[in-house]
Length: 308
Ligand code: GUN
Image (cartoon, rainbow, N blue to C red; front, top):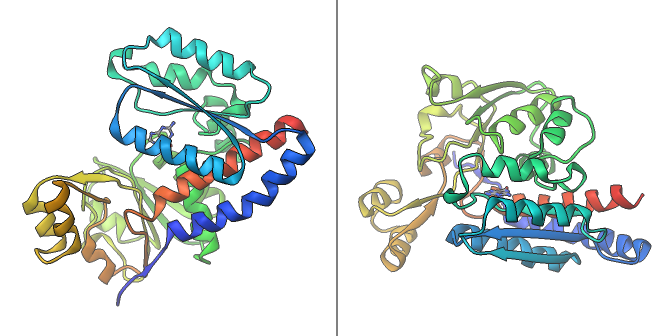
């Protein structure tokens, strides 16, 4: 059995198309477009790619997108001051500070920056206020990756209520909010992690398996109940040729791509899972585009709440 591919890129396109008339209506009503401020500090190459994509898609749906780029030696105080200015800016509805921040800023820099963002403009859903609202299943702004995954499951008609869901990974950004969103939709939810005994057996219980570990190809077919929906949140750069051949084969497109670039992107889910799962998100083209589409949805939601 070959798993159905859950095309996140196509769904993200539809979500942006759905947003465009709503953004136009907001702009006509408010006399200005929704405003999204992107803050990018330092020169992490992946962050530059992600922020570039957020900027392009934000402009495409009709937002005003301001990019605030700062060098790697910017102080934490300067970033906090910028966030406070954006909190006070009347035409800015959403603030996103891309993580990771440069390590020189200190271990708790990201948390301090996120906590400074006005919860009404916290389109990442990372502030304690919005996390608390999620725990209590109250109106707020929800982290984009897990919210995008729920949108994908719902639009694909994959039932959640009454199902067993296992989330591998307990991060604040994905694992924990993912588990809460599934719980609020009446799944029976397990959060598994690196210290879970017999992880494959726990995962094999899942009708919906979400892999958010950050280890290339970690979820092998023995983790997967036949027919399960498998959601791959991983974005891992694989640089070893032996690993690329081991995962994809010597004659594969990925091996060809590795020959050109010396690196390929892959998720946390082993390619052989496609023979067992009922449905599977690809990497790239699965969860990533949905995360960005959800950021657009959150920004419009924040704008509408601020002007109502
Ligand atoms: N870095 C990786 N993913 C994210 C995200 O969703 N939001 C922010 N702010 N930074 C990230």
